[in-house]
Image (cartoon, rainbow, N blue to C red; front, side, top):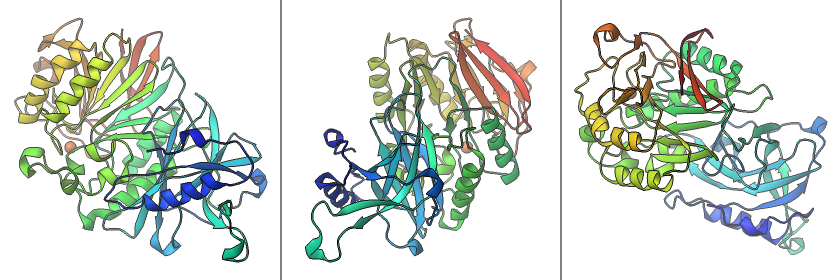
Length: 451
Ligand SMILES: [Fe+2]
């Protein structure tokens, strides 16, 4: 939540807005409230050559909670042993002489000695690169009597980093899609490295990230997941590659809604706190560009396939009806499984409740996961192969062990099915969606062009 959109003053010194931002930032630290606050102000920047770093965050990653063409959400973790730190960062156009600083909010990382900091930067230009540094807020003046409401200044002490906003149009925009990530650390690392070398601008993750299952004794999996992501998922410009996540069964005790009963946050202590998007609802949508929308759906883990999520889905699709937007659903359990049973309960529910809505919304491709193999279907509409149908691709084997698949030649809904690690590289070229399945060795082993 941004409280200061109108106070984006472009002046050189910290002021009242800074103090209010700080106070509100602190007031927003109640994790139960789920509320955040941000403000911003200007502080003098040091020359890039003097950008030494005294503070190393335990993890740093980018995502979006708002328009990716004009905002960026920066999240980082620090340890309690680093002492209290305000959730503050400064950003600027490359080489600019001033930092604009913003205060966000923090939440505890459950079962951890870490704090999760979240700041959303607003008012950016599309397809533009910016620099940022984490920092501290210091009170100026030798004694409390000398401190006025103007008495805070931003002191950058984190490493110099950067981000790039998305362009207005998805034409030519390359991004990664996949799921089921952190199983074998070396495969996960290699897959990340391959995708970074492919020049993807962001990654859409359809669940099963770290396989912590919400368990305190598996917290190291999250640490490793973020560490390897941060080490490898870096653009050619040196910026972290933003991650947009959805949930899988391993974000919710490894089970499903029906196995565990309703209960979103309690069944998933880590996921909604670690990632600003999709946040507490654990499903959500982002209008990534002016012509591309991603639906991040919960396939029956914290929320059932039907019910409130379905009502929300109907409302969101109606808002975008006839907009000409490409709508891309990403979710965990496949409607058309390459490994598991076609008659599986969740797969059946998805085919019944979601697919007719996708078809009515003009969806061309849906990305599925969870089965730990590679699959691609022919276009399917109304439960049969159809020229005007949706192609279902994926089945989630980014970095986990792969499984034996159904025989594609004997399964009506499978055009390809193989026990292969992969992630998908997606690009719209002249209105045609090009999807390539890429292995951790960098080889493209399947591709499809969807008109
Ligand atoms: Fe799964």
